[in-house]
Image 1 (cartoon, helix red, strand yellow):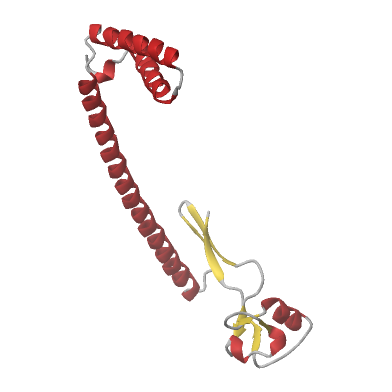
Image 2 (cartoon, helix red, strand yellow; image 1 turned 135 degrees about the vertical axis):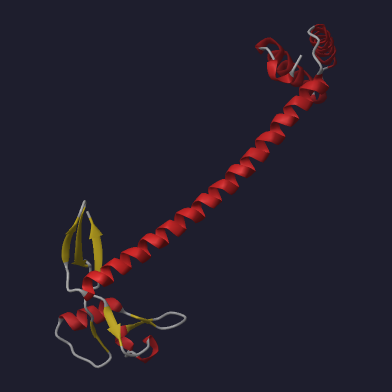
Length: 182
């Protein structure tokens, strides 16, 4: 009998056999152990009568396990290859997008219809970037956050600039642009 063709009945017998062995090993009750050993002999006789070969089953299942492990490893390697390929494609798309944006900007085009695509150079949203002319260590205390190294306190700086403050240490920059393909 091949290990792959275990009937539900044989599977149930194997499970019961394992339960009996575990109980025999842990039970202090001699009468229970004697009864369970008789049941174990009956199960073993049934399995022999079914032409059941535990070694053959174990070999078949070990082969299946080994094949599954090898497949899992191959799939993992293939997934890694696809992740790397995906990253390369993403970098290429960003590179080509930056090139197209540069070409449009150098030709003074902010909007263009190109076949199936509408290309628009749009301002980035969000807060204006801050351009620093000094390092965070050189900023006055009120514009720094305590850390292992100094870091500019963007919130305090924005508040200062929004309230009309002027300094030669920093100022608002201009929003960047991005290319949108619709």
